[in-house]
Every structure is written in structure tokens, then in C-alpha cells.
Image (cartoon, rainbow, N blue to C red; front, side):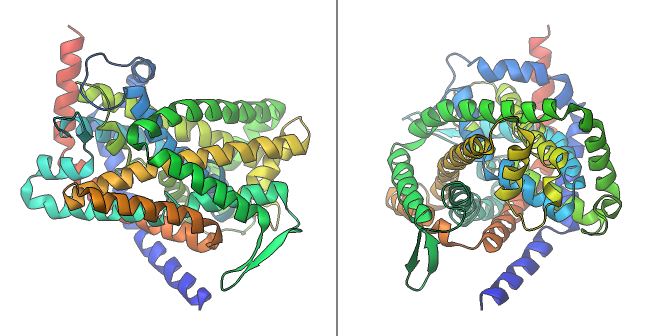
Length: 469
């Protein structure tokens, strides 16, 4: 029964994440990159400056940095640690190359999303900001496209409740905790009708659920406050560990880069036939890259719309740094560590075990310490992702229901319930479901970005004309 369901999910996933969607997302990023004159390179220093310098007197609910941290809280998660490992295991080292290509183009996409989110957002008398693809589809493309906006919002709710937001994050947390505290499954409990699990999974799911509930009750401002503290702190720790691995294996870095590039175009030459074609490497790399940085997905602009800013272009630049930090920096650290240490070639490892092997063998510290630090990063990254995606999916539901508070409160408790049951979902099914809803959510958003690319270019030109005179 479970095998049949899993096979059906895989077939749907392969269809959704087939060549057409990959081409659509890459073409969207390429179009915006060309029309904006490679803005992601030219304006990156300015974007990084705006990232830490909040705008004064702007409308909105949270600071620009708070909005970025909320967005990063939803992006820097299991995708950076587990997702990269899964992509390389399935598509070979070349998957990392395609992840980087998607991220480079995705920076232009994320910029455009952030810009449009602020331009078309709605701020009520209580200074409550609501914006994102549903509003830039409805207001930018016109009322006749409202059905597409609602479709995006529906998929957004599903991604939060059954995809990135809950099951995949909690599953990642549970795997990391078990691998560290009870790898031999010595302390187990049988749950009738569900299965046998380590006590660490049961205890962790209870603690996690309580903390998630405590934060979510406080709304976006509490989510932003927690994210502003946790995200930078854990990202720095993780990046430092990645840098140490690279420095410790500096002589092997050139060969690793050659392996990654060669594997992108001829995976079998690198893997010895263990993985398939270039299309597989592209599919896995791009899918996991988008899962991680969410460029083109349409989620980050929901957070961007809450930023205290008057300038759509400024917030677009700040949003763009999210993809840079998430994939160009953090995912690269993970991928290089896995390739440098040969972790992807070790049989019997999957998911977080691959990254754990890389850190244990790449860091010049005891394996117990490196395993603990990696587990800590994964737990906190995934925890903040759970918070960020609750915010996203609640805003989608708010748009769908016209702001009915009872429905949103009910959904919040359903979300907390999904967090609680997440550890008991199978790994394969969890990632497949997440991938499917990712792809479905990207479709309406990418259509809007193509349609509104002219607006993005016009706003960008007008802003820089004003500020360069």
C-alpha cells in the first residue's frame, strides 16, 4: 500500500518537476537578468549595504532586516543541509553546479519578487501589511487574473501545511537528533498503528511542537524577532564550519571543482554510472536549489511585503541577498564539504547522514563535537523555517478567505498538529510531497513575473535615475 502511494507520488513529482518547469524557471531568471543588466552582480554591494541599514519612516510591520530574516528563516533550513546532500546523492556532484546556476539567475527573480511585493501590497489602518504574488497578480495583471492569484494562495497553504513548512523540516530535525543521541535505536517505543520509534523522536517532537506553538501565537513580529536572533547566529556558525573544512582540504578544492563542473554535463564520467543523465543532475540540482532559496516560488515576497520601506527597489535588493546568502554561500559550503570528503560516495548513507559524514571527516575536531554542532544548526535552521512558513501560509489563507480570523486560527492549530506528526512520516514521501507543491506554487508566480517584467525594469530604472543624479 505505502509503496504504491510512494510510486504515485514519484510519478507526479517527475511530471511537475519535468523539463518544462525547469525551463520556465531558468528562462524567467535569464529574462530578468538580461532585462535588468545583470543587476545581481552590479548592485550586490549596494544590496548588502541595504540589508543591514534599515530605512527610516517606511510603512510596514517589521524592519527590512527583520523581513529578510523572516524570509531567510524560511529558506535556510533542511534544504541547505539535507537537501544539498539528497541532490548530490541522486544527481551526482554536478547537481551542485546546476544549483548555483539556478541561484545566480534566481537572484534576479528574487529581486523582482521583492520589488513587486512592496509595489502592490495593501496596508490597512492598523499598519498590517499584506502582499505577495496574490496581490501583484491581481493588481498588476488585472482582476481577470484573480483566479491565478487564488491558485497561488491555495498552493501556498498546501506547501506550508504539507511541504516545506512542516513535514520535511520536522523530519530533518528528528533524523538529526536520532543520529546523534540514539544512532543504534537502543531506546525505542512502539506506537500502535504507527510503528516503532526512538524515544528521542517522541520527546523531540513534543518539545518542538511546544516551542513552535509559543512563537506562532505571537504573530509576525514575534517570528521576526526570533529570526533576527537565531538566523544570523546559526548561519555564521555553519559558514565558519564550512570554511574550516575547505581550508583543511584546500589542496583538493581545484579537483573538487573540476568534479562538480564535469559532473554537471557528464555525470556518468564522474560517478561511474551510478547516476543517470545530465537532465537528472539538472533536475535534482535545480529542484533542491529552489527548495532551499525559494527563488521563483513566490514565498519570500510575502515577507518582503511586511517590510518598513517606501521603496520597492530597495526591498527588492534586500530580498535578492537572501538567495545569495542561502545558496551561493550556505549551500556551496555544504556541497563542497560533501564532494571534498567523498561523503556522497559512501554507500548506505542518505540525507543528513551524508552531511554528517562530511563534517565528521572534514573538520579537525572530534567527530562527536562536529556531529553535535551540525545537529544544532539543523535543528535551529529547521525550527525557524517552520516559523517562516507558517507566516507565509497564513497570509495565503488570509487572502483566500478575505481575512477570516477564525479560519486562520484553526489553520494555525492544524499547522502545529502537522509539526507534531511530522517525524512519523517516511523520508521519501516527505520530500516528494514537498517537491510537488513547490513546483505547483512556482507556476502562477512565474507567469506573473514574465507578465510584469516590464514593470520591474521601469521601476528599477526610475529608482536609479533618481538616486544617481
